Each structure stands twice: as structure tokens, then as C-alpha cells.
Amino acid sequence: MRTIQAELHAVTVPDNRRRKSGPVSAIAESMERVGLINPITLTKDLVLVSGLHRFEAAQSLGWERIDARIIDADARLVEIDENLCRNELTALERAEHRSERKRLYEAVYPEAKHGRNQHTRASVDTSRIGNDFRSSTRQEPGSYSSVAAAKEGVTDRTVRLSVAIAENIPEDVRDEIRDLPIADNQKELSRLSKLAEPEQREVARMLVAGEVDDLRAATGAMSRRERVSRIAQIEEGNRPLPEALGRFPVVLADPPWRYEHSKTSNREIENHYPTMSLDEIKALEVSGLATDDAVLFLWTTSPKLAESLEVLASWGFVYRTCWVWVKDRIGMGYYARQRHELVLIATRGSIPVPIPSARPDSVLEAPRGKHSAKPAAAYERIEAMYPEYRKVELFSRTPREGWAAWGNQCEQ
Image (tube, rainbow, N blue to C red; front, side):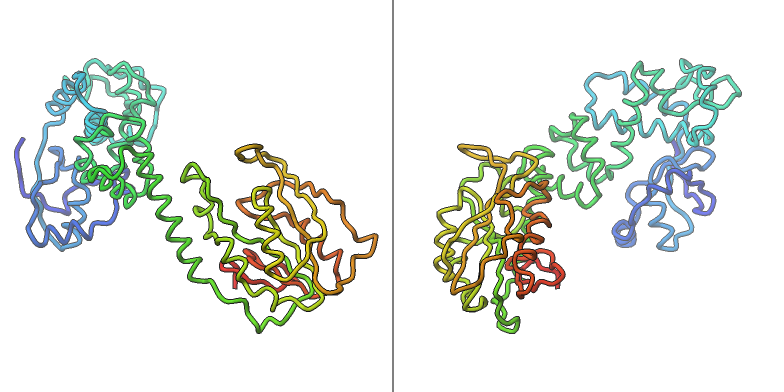
């Protein structure tokens, strides 16, 4: 292997390498400060084998030449094949060897990377690839993965998945995790390769720092962090009950009840939206938002039934009756798995009862939606019961036409 000063304009970059190029500003900044530490790798025909980001960084800096190692494709392939026969290779090392082998193969056979003439691949003498990389046949070769799979005695899919690991995980991330258990776990490496680069770097950081033990824990921690950030933004939108809205004869409320017994972080209500304590809910000035004669529809669940009655009293309402929303899918529960929610109906003053034809069935059957979303049929019931009155929804997530709305997730 020899090193030369290659003219940038003379270097050929395979099309499939350009598509995988990413941002190079940080690399360019480093190269401008300390120069090129590791030369790029070229074939003797000046086809780029490795170092695409360094090559593009040099272009962005206006360099005319770059240090490059010139490799003999046949000799290097023999070395790679010998390494691939070693059992002690980690999954990451095997992926890197296969990826380099693919780059060499496609540099010599550029037509192979386009997947053309795949029916002629059986005519390629795979036993000679490595000893004589170009092979004696003059027919177009098959895809790299099919040729490599035949030579290694593995499946085409195994080779493709392995190569994708090295191609999609940046070199600096691979170096960070090289001595960690994940480096010998192909399934986790494959999952890591499908994450965006910033997420890969954060996973590597957490693994190296010992904050987590594996990829699943890392992605779970990142997901939770994202949810916490989103919830914090939602909480910033909390506003007092607005006097400017006026007062309403019909009030619908869906408080964010706080549950104390969540067993896993995935199921914590706080992962989806900020909750409130019972005292915080009771302290809301709903009494001032409702007219003297008013009806309140309060969403609750079986475990929160006793607390809900306290809320009704604190808001100045008297419990009258309820209806049940029966869902199409069962949920979780400690004594009984829940498949329903309750709407408590309470009044104050002398709000009229609905006319008989507008009094709904006490059971509402409707499909379960996304977390905490309530069925449209519930709104339609209330609208039919009290069509002539102004309505407001507290803790609204999506305003409904004809209703006033208040809530920290409410679209303004």
C-alpha cells in the first residue's frame, strides 16, 4: 500500500456513496485546524473506497489535493476474506469487513451496485474472488451480497443486514461502542443503524457513560426525555380560567387525574400529559365559570370515583347520575381490567332537565382512540341534551365547533 497526493478532481466517487453522505462541517473544521490525520483510501484507478466525508470536507475547504492510500484490491480482499474466517470477530468488526469488501467489489465492478443482470451471478467464479478479484469471466457479476453470501456460506440477507450496520453507523460512533457488549450483538447494532445520527451518538454516549446497559434502555431514556420536554412545554401553556370567556350553563371537564401506582415508565400517565393532584383540580375556579343554573359533565374512571365526588362538591355541583363509555378494547387494572370510563352528571341551581327525546342511553359504546381522547359521540349527546345553551370544555385538547375551550394542550 502506498500513499500519494491525489488530485481531488481526479477522484471518482461511486454514486451509491454520494447518496449516503452526511454533514461534513465538523470534519472540515477539524481538518482546517489540524490537517488530515487519516488519508482517504482509493483503488489504483482513483475510485474512492473509504473516506467520503473527509473527501467532501477537503472539497468544501477548497483543497486541490488530498493524502490518499492506494490499495491493491485483490490483495486487500484476500486479507478481508482471511479475517472473515476468524470466529473471534465481533458483529461490528464483521460488518466493517463486509462493508469494505463491498466497496472494493463495487469499485472494480461498478455495474454490480446497480443490481443489473442478477441472473448471471451464478456464472461468477466466487471461489476465485479474493485470489483474483476480477474473476476470469467477462460477464457482469451479480450483486455484492449474493456473491459474498455464496462465498461465506451465509444468506444474502445476512450479508445485506451486516453491511447496512457499517454503512449507516458513522465511524466515530462505531469507535465509541467498539469495546462494549453491543458491538457483538448484531440485532442491537441493526436497530442502532436505523436511528438518526444524532440519536446514534446519544446512544453511544449513554452506553459509554454507563447510564444504560443496552440499546433498549437508551432509546427508552431518550423517548422519555423527549416526552418530558414536550410535557414541560405543555405545562408552560397553563393559564388561569379566563374570565373573558364569560359564564356557561353547560360545562364539560376531563381533568388530568394523577395515578399513584404506575408500575412501568411506559405506562405512566405523565408520559403523555402533565397530571394534577386532587387538591389542584379542586382548587380550579370552575364555580365562577359556570352560570348559577348549570350542568356539569365530568369524565372520570372507576379508581377516581370517590375523588370525583369531592371535585363536584368543591366546584359547587351536586351529583345526579352518570353514563358509561364502554370501549372496544380492554385496558389495565389492579383488581379488574378496565374497559369503561364514567361521565358524572351534576347540577347546580335549577338548570332544566333535557326533554325526554334527548335523554341518552346510560351506556355509550364507542371505539377507544389515542391516549385520553374521548369519542365524538359524547359531545353529540351533550349537544342534543342542551342545544340552546353555551358550552365550554375544560382541559380541551382539540376545540370543537360551537364550544368554547380551555386547556394547556388546546390549539389556539
